[in-house]
Image 1 (cartoon, rainbow, N blue to C red):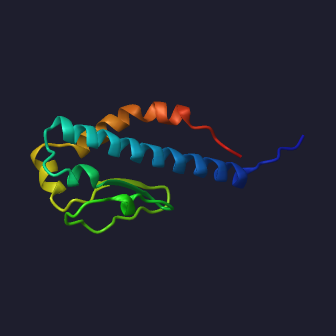
Image 2 (cartoon, rainbow, N blue to C red):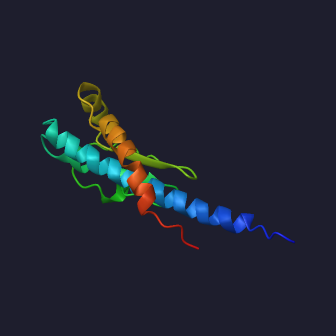
Image 3 (cartoon, rainbow, N blue to C red):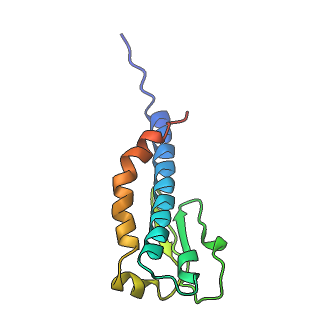
Length: 123
């Protein structure tokens, strides 16, 4: 009897699935945060609302931010990492005053089983 172990191939499949799951989770977190901003009545000019972005090792949506407000520098994510962030410089003060992003992270954590379940491991 012999066993063929395809460890490198399996790891590649799992790494790809992990990255796709993290990307989807970051996008979901930004979406939740935007809803929370509106529900918290934190919209004035709309810049903060529209400054939400996500980043992974290979992709980010920072360049899609529109508006004339002051933007914080783009954050980057390392391998097997994802970031959900808001570029409006004043977003941190709004977050401290009435959470929209941390709350979104908690909401996304509840969504994670569904995000994982929806992911298919591709060869």
